[in-house]
Image: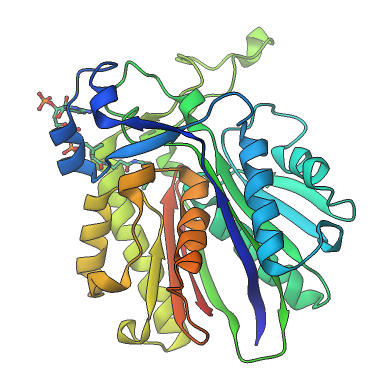
Amino acid sequence: MGTVVLGTGACVPERILTNAELETIVDTNDEWIRSRTGIEARRIAGHGEQTFQLAARAAERALAAAEVGAEEIGLLVLGTVSSHMLMPSSACFVQKEIGAVNAFAYDINAACSGFLFGLDLADKYIRADPTMKVLVIGAETLSGRLNWQDRNTCILFGDGAGAAVFGHSASDRGVIGSNMFSDGGLWRLLYMHAPVSTNPELVVPDNSGAHVQMEGREVFKHAVRAMEDAVCGLLAREKISIEAIDVVIPHQANIRILSNLIERLGVPSEKVFLNVSKYGNTSAASIPIALAEADEQGLLHRGDLVLFCSFGGGFTWGATLIKW
Ligand code: ACO
């Protein structure tokens, strides 16, 4: 059929920030956070854990699992909105770090949908050139892009990285299809400024610092509806019923968004992989970390239909279906 996952890997920072610790930083409490988001803890990057460094470790683990050498990678794409530099891309730093000397590399800015947009790209490249191997990574250190005085946002996010190696298979397995969307018209509901411009003509009004800003309730409503539409559209196009899906790996935004989505889709909750309680929302890293954990736990069996869906700033959203 086409593009298959050859190996997965993840890397999260050592440091765990619990809800109890957050109570000492902002006016919040464990009960509020758990009941509204399902999050119990998140990882916070420290020294030696920049976005590209977490990404490189996740990539090395995915390459080892795939038994693919770094030099075999033709394309390396990294979904992130939290690089330590604007240029070069984090993808180029990862390329250097892991020795992917034959790859061309670049970042994708699609927020929480970065990994699925990258997966779609990998699928299209591999369909065009079946000899190609593509490394897709999602990695974030949003802890450095949060306003730690804003309890509406700082409780939600965490740091980490996940990766997958993609290649061609002549079998009937692989990516069945993707259904991807963006709507820049709604950007104000979830955004993060760039550093202030040194050109006074280009200074953006209200740039109060490069940190995440969000209208939580609005994001919630759009996220549920958009992911439901993307999934239903994809399944209708591929003529596959929701009952046929074996495993759902959604973007781990928060438990209430996911419960709403699961209910609307009519998927039994035991088919849905969740780890949001441990890591919070790791944006582009959330799906590949979840994928790597589901893979490691032996939850994905050959021939399973695995459904992914995401929603994030932009807005960007989509769904992807893989026959494992
Ligand atoms: N601790 C305690 N109280 C809080 C906190 C907090 N951390 N944050 C807000 N509150 C208070 C508010 O101030 C408000 O108090 P008030 O009634 O006295 O004014 C009250 O709790 C309710 O606030 P709401 O914002 O209305 O709370 P809501 O039920 O909408 O929950 C939440 C907020 C969890 C952010 C919810 O809107 C949500 O999940 N939104 C989706 C956001 C999201 O997941 N974004 C991630 C990026 S996009 C993506 O990944 C899908």
